[in-house]
Image (cartoon, rainbow, N blue to C red):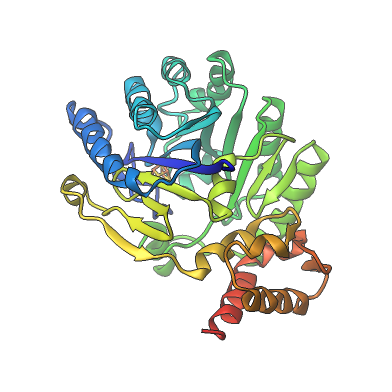
Length: 379
Ligand code: SF4
């Protein structure tokens, strides 16, 4: 039987402060109860036990992703104990398991990075966002210049070679020169993967409220489109390639975990607010520590739209044949007709393959909407 890829996501909910633009489930707390991790690990163990029956023969764990929140606020043993839970679960483990952990410069000390590496984490994703104080201030993020300066060197010294950094662009009053300075620092320090996200106004966040009240400048779509094009050109010039709307990598360093999720592969989500996609169902863990403790999960059948996300986000050519794994022949015909209806400046299509161009990636949300409409008309 062919090996099928399975992924696992583990959510660590605490952050030092709640950033103004953030709509992830996170709890701002510099110090959390000392017994929290043991209690939480026990809950994760029970969560995993409930989901294991949904893993099928032939599925192998290929990636693990510690996301948050701020996973680097957890102790080193949180990583080793969580990984031990997965390794002892009976799920076959791929020999080159990709294990990513997110972290912020404030808590990614050299000691913490060594502990994470020792636990088995082999890919580190650092939430830099920007090296510019005015930009971080606008975003409501903490900024410790010394830690920002040292964190990538510390990661290398701790033994990480697969280092990713997150950047935010399109922040009001952020100049292209500042974005370029940020990129240069990451390139010079040997980062092999960069996630460049356009700032978005997420409903319910502090930033959205500040914008609505006129306390903070609004986002300019023109600035964002301009900077996105410049970022792509600059990173390509420096040996990266774009493999997704917001993600750039040196060859061989794509984030396997995220690609698997975008391609509609199965994943087990563990921890408060985590989602799972297993056996054609989505399982939503509650967004509350109290409810997570009593495992109040919600299960919903997967929707066709779940499989459209990768089509509208990934930059590599995709075959129509591969869509038959998720869609009927009639649906693939509809999807093909819709993709053909876009101007070739946005999507290149031939009889077998289609590929979003850099311009197409700028409009991935609209492409997703059009594809979703095409499918819904059949039902
Ligand atoms: S550190 Fe990350 S997860 Fe935490 S509040 Fe800020 S953006 Fe959200």
